Image 1 (cartoon, rainbow, N blue to C red):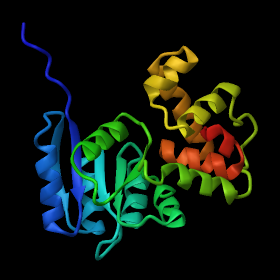
Image 2 (image 1 turned 45 degrees about the horizontal axis):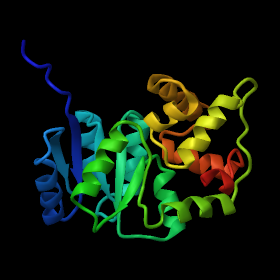
Image 3 (image 1 turned 60 degrees about the vertical axis):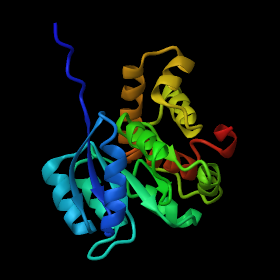
Length: 226
């Protein structure tokens, strides 16, 4: 019997610098879990290609001509919420990165990180996990909690359940679906179901956005990050 062909993660690379696109492509082609379905040099081209080609993951530069990565991410997530966007940025300011993540990006990496880290990050966002650069990820979430917005006005019957709050708190700690499942003694499919409900109720498109929204709205606190 022949082995079942493993499903590959389709990736769209977006960066206005050809050398950076080439460097990332050279890293990814060495891993047989990826298939690179295209490259784009600006945000407008990225939106068009993403919505037509439907990659699982878009690796998105932020500072680009024609349309920046933040607006491109917003349009991609609006057109197809199932596409995961991993932002690459040279910016380390908390407020700037929060804005990027609140457009629907699943996470971010500092732009000088390539190799093993970016490979792991792409695999993580493809499976629905949250990716925050370890250098400033915790500080970023704490910054979000310090500047809360008005509580989200959930419709009657839409409030987060006790179990959904448990899942959201564990997600805020950076735990994967597998780790959340083990902690709560449920299966990973159930975890994904809870996350889908959380996204719907909080009106967000990614785990990262849900955590930030939860912090800012007061559903989870800085203590929950520990």
